[in-house]
Length: 260
Length: 269
Image (cartoon, rainbow over all chains, first blue to last red; front, side):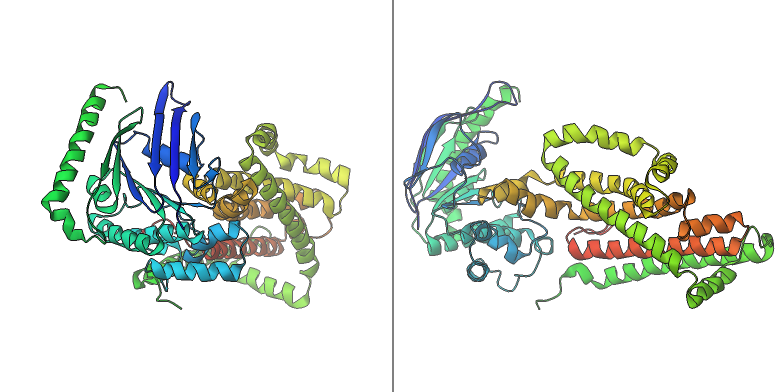
C-alpha cells in the first residue's frame, strides 16, 4: 500500500551548464504513508530530486531506496503526477489512465475496470471517452492523478501538479488530493513553490535551499486530519507560513546577487 | 454517449457553412469564367473548349467506356507509386526521426535526391525500365516519398518531451515510446505529408506518361494537345484536377477524424 523512501547522499550536476551543481549530498527520509511537501525557490532542484526518486534521472552519486527496492529506473511501485499537459492528446481519458497497465501487459478488461474505478474516485465518471483537449485544466489534472494511481503505486510523486490552475480550482484540487490520499494511503512527495499549499497538504514541509539544493529546514505540520480549507485562515497556520516565507526570502535575497 | 463537447457549438457550424459557401462560390465564378472565355474570347476549337463542352465530353467518355483504359493505367501507376512512397516515407521517416545516427547517414542523400530534377530523369528511367508501368511508378514514387518522409521526421522529432517522459515514468521502453507516443504524435504530420505527396504524384502521372506510353490520363492529355484536340485535353486535365480535390478533401477528413485534438487554424480552445 505504501512504502518508506530513503534518499541518501544524492548529488547531481547538470553537464549542459558548466559547474551547475544542482543538488549537493542530500539526505531525506519519508515514512510509509507520510505526506511530505518539498518547497524551495525555483531552480533549487526540487523537480530534479523528484525525477531522481522516480528513476527518470540518474544522480552522480547517492542512492534512493523505496521499500526494499533500490531505484535505478522507473518502477511500477512509483506513480508520477506531472505538471499540466502531460496527458497524451490522442488518447481518450480512459486510454490515458490505462496506459501504465497497458505497458505492464495487464488484460484490457481488468485495466478498464481499474480506470473506471479511479475516474469515479477523482470525480470524472462519465468522461471516459473525452479527449484531454475537451477538458478544463482542473479536470486534466484529475486525469493525471488517476493515471498515476492506476498502477497502484506504493509512492506517489507530484511535481507542481496544480501550478497552472487558477486559485479557486487549486483549492478544490488540494481538498480532492487529501480526500484521495486518505482513501488510498500512499506515501506522497509533493513538490510546490506555494507555501500555503505545502503547509495545508502535508505532514512535513521540507524546505530546500537555492542552488546547490540542500535541505534547509524540516518543519512538522501539526494540524489534525481531515483538514478543512478553513484552517488556512487560522493564526497558527499563518504563523507557519510566515516562518517558511522568511526562510525562503533569505534564499531569494541571496540569489539576487548571483548571476542567473 | 456523454454530452456533446464544445467542438460542435453552433458558431462553429456556421463558420463551417460559411467556409463551404465561400469555397463553392469561387468554384462557380471559375466555372463561369471558363465558359465565358470558351464561348466569346477564344472560340477556336483547337486551342480551347468551354466548360460545358468539356463536361459533355467527359460524360460521353465515361458512358462509352473510352476513358476506362486511361483511368486504369494512370490509377494503378499512381496508386502503386503513391502507396510505395507512403510506406517507404513513413518507415524511413520514423527511423530518421528516432535515430540521430540514421538521420546523419540518410538525410544528406534524401535532400540531394529531392533537389534532383526527377522530371529530367524520366527519359532515363524509360530507357532503363521500358515504356511499361515500372518507369512511371518510379517517377511517381520519387516525386512523392520526400514529402511523406520529411513530414514524418518532423512529426517524430516535435514530440513534446513531457509526453515522452510521462511514458517513461510508466516504464515504457524505447519501442513502446516510439509506437505509443511518437508515432501517434506524428500522425497528423504524416497525413499532411500524404496530401502534399498526392499533389506531386498527380503531376508525376502526367510527366511520366509524357515520354513514352500508350495509355493513361497524362498520355491522353499530351496526345490530345498534340493533335490540337483541346476538348479531349481538358477532359484528361479536369479528371486529374477533380481527383486531386477529392483526395485532398478525403485526407482532410481523415486528419480530423484521427487527430480531433488538433484544431484547424483560427479555432481556439
